[in-house]
Every structure is written in structure tokens, then in C-alpha cells.
Length: 401
Image 1 (cartoon, rainbow, N blue to C red):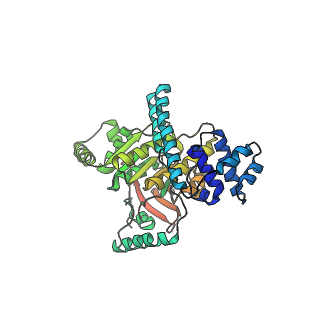
Image 2 (cartoon, rainbow, N blue to C red; image 1 turned 45 degrees about the vertical axis):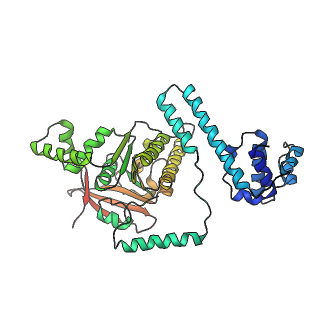
Image 3 (cartoon, one colour; image 1 turned 180 degrees about the vertical axis):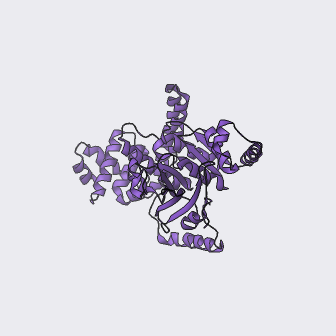
């Protein structure tokens, strides 16, 4: 009797195992075993006890004599050991599948992505489970005490915009931050400003700009150099001194870039995990959400919703803040944007822990004013923040009255 078959007998003996196990349909190779496991799950979900009679009645295509034999000579007390063997077998099967990927996939990049997905699945099981409040109390008190001892220091990574940091407590682990704006209103620039201002190990994934374009903008932001001069080559002597200083600073910083046009969100997730595992990044920036491609079989709004959920999950799994820019729909052009203005999907506003809109406002005969509109803030206040946005060097700075 295989471990999978033995496990089914244990489930029929003790239905409570189903609430604790992390075995899933994908762990069953035999069609009969898979059919029985699915039937047991469905019967229990419907509120009935799963035994020989109820499972056979639910799925009449299951051989009742074969089903009845599953509980012969089975002990349910050692189900955890059987579960471990089943999960190990699944991982081994996946690893053996890598050989087929190498043989059949002629495109190296596609093969590497497929192998990464296999490796990611190996040993990966859900971290989300029911926890007793007794287990959470100590950890939560320790966290509060740690914040108390910080004496006003932000628990999260600083963005460099003081009022934004005060309201959001900085970029905190396991949270998704979404920065929304219409085209050419500063989406990429503000992410690069955040990157420049933070002093943590950081990753930056771009589906729109090349790494050289990103570095050029960082030169402009950090060195306060007009970006047009850098791009055109019309630099002044003082600019070269600033460029050298910025180049020297970034040569010593732990910042990791990845750019790819028309990038799939699957690739973005893979590169993010690689940055975390290889370089230990503490924060990730993604530019921008709707530039990532999803499953072509899905409608566009379904793709964007899937990407949004994946980025939210990424923050949780990597235990870092994920800061992503997102485009707003055309209706938001020239007017004050709101939370429902994210383009292509309402899932974005649901997934964001903090949502900030860039709003460039100009009255006739008055200078341009730029606001960061905090439209959603799960753990704090929502408010409009006036900032200074210098388009010449792409800098976002604190507004001082």
C-alpha cells in the first residue's frame, strides 16, 4: 500500500486530520487516490462525516470494495510521519521534472524560469494557519515593547518625505504600498526618490525603464543635476563633480536592479525572490504594476487583479515592504485622483495597505503645486501632503512653509 493510499485510510478513520494536514490534490498521482481524496474533502466541507458509506454515496464512480479496504490495518496516530513522506515524494517528482524541462525547452531563459518555479514549489507549503491567541500575545507584546524602546524612531524604512513617514510609520515589513499617478506625473521618479533616500538593501524591478535610464535618473535626483543635461551630454564642470560623487556613493550601496520590457509578473516574482535569497534585500520597488503581463488567457482586468494579489502575497512571503507604482485611468487626468481611479482593476485598492496618489495641481497664474494624497492607510490617518516636485532633476522634497 502506498503512503498516499494509507493516508486516505487515516483520513477515513479520523476526519479531523483534514483540518491540520497540508497535503493537497497535487500530492496524489494515482487517479483512484485523487478521486477519493477529493470526495472526502467535499463531504467534510458539506458538514457530513466522511466514511465508507458517505464517500461512496457522494461519488458512485468510486469502487466501494476498494474504498472499504483502505481502512484495513491502518493506524491514524502516525499520520504526520506519513504526511512528511508524501510531501517528500511530491518534491522528488518535481525535481525529476527538471530533467524534462532541460531536455524539452530550447530557450534558456524560459527553461530557467520554469526551473525556478519548480524549486520555489519544492518544500513550499502554506504559512497561513489558525493560531491560538496565546501564541500571539508574547510576540505582539515584544513588538510593542520594541517600538516603545525606539523612542519615536520609525519602525519602517524611511521614504525621505517626513510627513509621509510620520503618517505611515515608514515602509513596514509585509505591507503593500501602491503609488498611483497618470503618465508623466512622477510615478517612476517618486519610487527612485524613495530608493535614493532609504539606506536599506533594496531591489528595483522595472518593466518600463532600462537600468541605464534608472541610473541616469538617480544621478539627477541624488546629484541635483538637470536630467536633460545628463541625457544630452551638455554638462557643466560642476556637474561632473556631482556625478563622480553619486557614482562613488552608489558603488558602495546594496541596490539591485532588474529590467525587462513586457515582463511577466511570474518573472518579476522570481527575480524578487532571487534578490531576497541572494542579496538579502529589505525593501522592493516595482515600476509599474500594469506594465507587468499576466496570463494571456485571462481578460486584462483579471490579469491585473491576479498581479495585484501576487504582489500582496510577495510582501507577506518575503517579509519585506513592497512599493509598487500603478497607473490611474484616463478619467483621472487633470482632476484630483481618488482611490477608485486605479486603472484596469479595483483589486488594487483592496490589496494596498497604503495607497498614495500623486496630484500635480495648477491654478492660472500660480506656480505648480504637488500633493501626495494618502487615500488609504490601514494603520493610520489619511491626509493630503504638499511636497516639492522639481521636474528638472526629478526630486521630491519636503515642503517647508
